[in-house]
Length: 468
Image 1 (cartoon, one colour):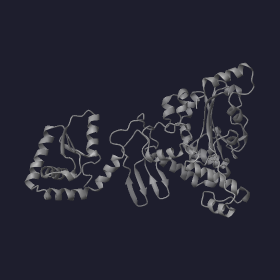
Image 2: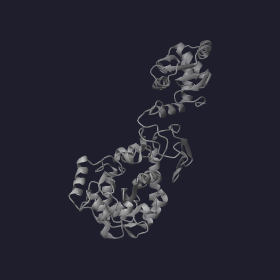
Image 3: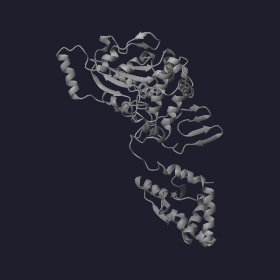
Image 4: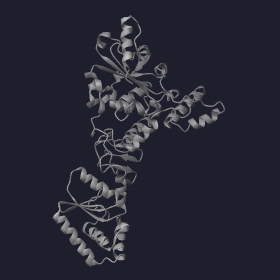
């Protein structure tokens, strides 16, 4: 959160009255912390060179385990903003739980500069800062060691060989898994769902040429093509751009998860600290806090998860802070026509094309529509599309027809609407003949039918020939 004016005034007062301690307790704690650099040598978190620090701010990002997919996800944004941070006289320092091998893997995977990274192998800094560790559950005394060994054996890393670590490790996992379930972790479940359902307020998250592999599953390039063994298909939102599409962020997290799980013993060497969360601090050159935020749970590394670096807008500008990855971004917040639940439903309707085609002809026959009626209906359609630039044949109760008309209205298009009937099962003989005529002319059984410049362009979510 941004600190109040009162807090800033107090900082000034402490300076005037000669208090030796920096205003921010967090700064003092970080300044005195004993950490390691990426090679394992003792180091400080902050730059000790007063001359180099002059006029510069410090952005300290305390991560949970380097082997936590939160960590690589957050660092992707930070790395993308690194030039802007430097231009704004902000020094970045990242602290994570792990050892030197984890540091090497993490920097190779994310692209983080090794000089920026500091290691806190036993989470001593995390504990000194009072960072979140979940609901602080304890393993009940009545649960035997054998039961704990069995349960830990089902988790990454298994049970520790040192039995003295058994209960501390089990306690850490208990609290971590509780956070994954949203217990003691406000915002975690919402963020998990956002990863799967998408977010109109966030920019795209996956590069158009990126491919993610997880066992027999391959996603990409981009968000469209998916292979699951011999099964291949394309996501229904593959043609949409400018926002975080459904499962797009979940795909990024899958990539990060595969990286960690396939190298678990390298990334996670201290499972007693797997429940520790992180924090973000921005300090001025005097050590006064300009911004502080403590992670509330799993996947809550920012107050504004849709745009994690929003807190830096005043310092590095909106363009980078709100979209550091520079991926397509409509600006957020707009639920555009043609998106949402109707689209997959419309795509699914296309799969039923053969059924509706057979039903179309049977209905026309049952209602007494003859070939002459269908021929007359064809002539009516031909006359309409010849006389009008845009013609839309609709059902009055069809949400797909309503959406198509709304899309045309939003674009300011002039069109001729022809309501065939309320719905396919409410048609009379004449309307049934018109429906049959449209099928014969276009090969499409569903409505709406849209003609532009005399050409049939499909329906709301169908293209010419899609039902063939």
